Image 1: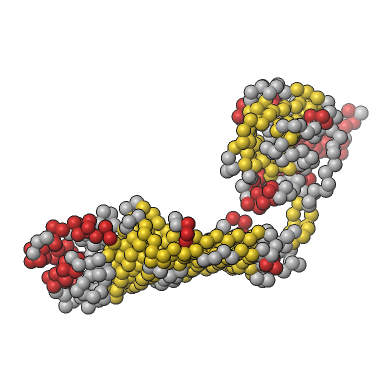
Image 2 (image 1 turned 90 degrees about the vertical axis):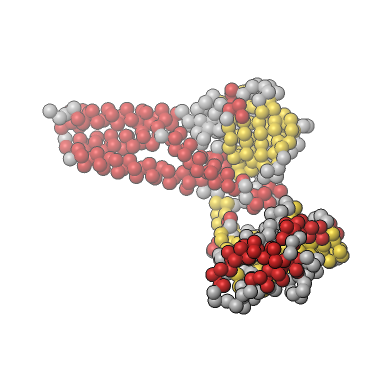
Length: 202
Length: 426
């Protein structure tokens, strides 16, 4: 069989074409994380401008920010994270890197503000979330103000179906979720922090 | 042949990568559609009648602002003197069919900083959103401003060395100063320098004020009609008399007449049926103030009226304590964010009596306007459907490692097939 493939011109041409297809497919798949990062960077630059626009401020005040639109900026100094978070956690919205669970309060409001972020692709804003420790801070800046949260405990791991981490709380908290372990969606890594102070509006 | 294959492979690789990149935004747009959204527009206007800078003290006299948007909202302010609350009127209307027309705010005989006096300063403002067509208007008015009083003493000190001596003794140094300005004209004009300086010094000893300014209203309005949105700012003209009591001439040293300055932006409102985002067109325009100077003393021979041109500042009495410069600012139009436009009439700036502790800076007749709009029908991201509680926490990973590993497998397979083909060759 192998000898047939080697000797027949039509077989040689077919194998040659197959090798090119495999090569191209391999390059595309190996470069997939890189491509998602490039795409996320393009989205972020657009979201950055949108976050500063008066139209978004108007929509935010009306609590009418649409899925995929800028909602808040998240900064985690300990991890050097600085990204715009969009509204919604649909796969399309999460191509921006991080998204706000729409069923939870808006940033800095009373209750449990929850945000999901990619860990290995699309800019991987939550790539090193496991390195956070109690005392580290998370800063959210919205079109109408901002606030700072502080971790009270180390990150922990839950099952993907454990929705209790999004449940309402009596005080002002923020919950960050991302997939765990890296490159897998088998579990979720959770970070929770409590509000410590408000920031002046930009 | 192998070269051809390599070129072909590279080209195909590029095509695949481009297709891959293009596929990402295509997927990203899978929840977009064309829908009808509320029309959006905004227009604003701002006018300033007079800005005075007296030895570091800055005052705005006669100012107005107006703003409307499609929320709907209308807001206006008119101020006679911005720092005197009794001369400021504010109006605000938000939501449908709201009207706010506060009474005119006026204060008579306003003393400011002990350096100038405003005879009457008033502010007016009105705002309404009746019928969903927001309108806002503000006006700042002042009767007149007199600058003088305690400023006269340092002025006389500045020329005291000259005034305190006989006229004959001071003619020579002044002639040198004025001569530097006038020498080119001496041979052609019928000019008696000694007589001119005598008049000036005699008059200085009797002046009662430095400047008298009569300035027209500064008005700003923003209006909406069925077909367009407009923001217009008008700073009406002013007349400035420098050393108004300069007897025995019976006329000021100079009278500066400044014309109206205006700036406007028109925004067309596209019909509700259009889906062309460019249909909301903003058109800016400005008219810079014209300036003319009339001289009370024949400093330039028979020439007593001088127009000041854009880009060509006029300096009078150069080298003397009374040196003054007048410049016309012109104006500009340009693009703002989100397709909006703006127009600015820069007004007129004067630096008067520079020999008097740095002089008096005045900016007159500044007007600016801006506006923009958006069609009522656009391709936008569809409003999200009612939120349903997800059954699992958001999936934010899973392919980050496996996909590149699969890619490596494909690359190894490609290498294997290539070796299979090439091993046949001798």
